[in-house]
Image 1: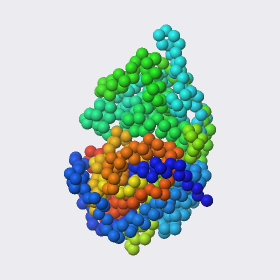
Image 2 (image 1 turned 120 degrees about the vertical axis):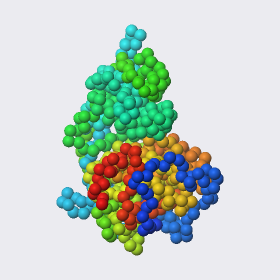
Image 3 (image 1 turned 90 degrees about the vertical axis):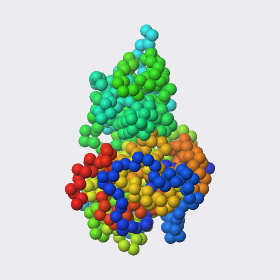
Image 4 (image 1 turned 90 degrees about the horizontal axis):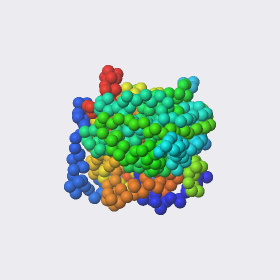
Amino acid sequence: MITIKNRGAGLLKSLLAAGIAAAVFGCSQKEPTTSSDAAAPAQATQSQAAAAAGEAPAAPTISGAEKAEIAAMAQDLHKHIAVLASDEYEGRAPATKGEELTVNYLAEQFGQYGLEPGAKDAEGKPSWFQQVPVVEMQIESTPLEITGEVDGKAYTQTLQPLSDMVAFSQRQVPQSQLENSELVFVGYGIVAPENNWNDYAGLDMTGKTAVILVNDPGYATQDKALFNGNAMTYYGRWSYKFEEAARQGAEGAIIIHETGAAGYPWEVVSGSWSGAQISLAADDKNAGRVAVESWITGDAAKDLFKAAGLDLQQEMDAAKQRGFKPKPLNLNASVALKSEVRTSSSRNVVAKLPGSKHPDEAIIYTAHWDHLGINDHASGEDHVFNGAVDNATGTAGLLAMARQVAQLPQRPERSLVFVAVTAEESGLLGSKYYAENPVVPLEKTVAGINFDAMGVLGPMRDVIVMGYGNSELEKVLEKAAEKQGRYLAPEDHPERGYFYRSDHFSLAKKGVPMLYFDSGTDSFEHGRAWAQEKGDEYTAHAYHKPGDEYDPQWNLEGAAMDLALGLEIGLELANSRHWPNWYKGNEFRAIRDESADTRK
């Protein structure tokens, strides 16, 4: 029997989920009105301007037939989320009982709706499952010891796991350590020639540990001409910083946590990195990564810099200026990690609705089915990270979408592919593996839409586009949104780097035009302040915490409306010969253009 906990219901009834919508109904044979030479939009859309002037409708402009379809999808969402986010599914961690239950449930539902298996097994036979080789590591860390000489005396600062620091390793070996590794403050840890920026200039990092600030100088200065201004670039992501430290030959890397710059509180860091860690299996066991990757709290960093005779805030101010020079801290770091390494295989679930005329071309819809599982180190009595919003909602959206398209009286001309990917929470691993091993070649993948944490507060006027101004898909989305009486808007917190934090990014890096959009925060019924308040409550109390639990009282009409937008976009593209592209100047445009000859 499925059991559903409601200890967090009071909060979660009114929470806001950031979301990614894609999916279901409304078919247009018209060619999308976009141009491959179009420039990125430089200002708000007309519908957004109208809303700002007080002209937004008081209710969504949905026809009777559409209302029925939206109601049906909302009902499907409730049904599937209740199952996927139940205690029985144990937080859906990869390579666990929770995975087995999840992927089998998804395959069963896709099959019942009439879709076909989209992957192949080892013998080349059709399969619902794409095997993803992974390594699971349960890591135990000693305290992080900072040692040196301060004012002529021996100095030791001991940082305790979880409360002061977290340490882990991407190396797939039983032990990793730092032993008296020299600490060097490298500012934001960025090497960006196009921005004339190199925080490692003149350094030999061999045997040393980089101490790094989170986010990037654009956010720190709010200078629109520096990097991307307030909007985080990929250089600001923690994943880039650890990778760059490895490229520089460092032995270790420590990121200083800041809630504002990171976009989440310390509890998200400690909760995400204290349980079992999953990575893609690597032939070299990730020997090229640094031995220890770590985060420390802001308070711990202040004490560290004080011991080094420096003021942390002054050094942060210096680091955001072009020409910053890295500084040895004259302190050393020691920490030892012990890992239980287990090699196994996780699974992406792939379902396909073959196209009637061009089955070798596809629109792809993605959502990650995984969450954080059970973490016995979590505070409180509840150790199950159910992940109801993140991302049982998006996964349920794939199923709701699949049921709608399977009921279409005529199949679309191009194929529709639904991929529920694994191990997003461990670094977009499932989508990364799919991008390297696609079931439809990426040059023939028309476009994609990703679902990640859909809205549960009801219909919203605004459709928030992560990475607004990136691709021609936004014009198709805008047209569909206006039919619902809604408008497009840039994200409220571009400094949090949401564009780089979900599975669409794995395909975007390969050139596939991808959309990532949220339900927004401008509630038709309650207004913007209410929705923003509930969103802040979710981030503070439920995001990546045991409190992210299903509530049967959620209003999922807004999520269903988002699914309707995604379906209209997908079917418009599926019934056309259009190949959308990134706008000129986008970092992924050149990659897409390289394969243009394959799409004639």
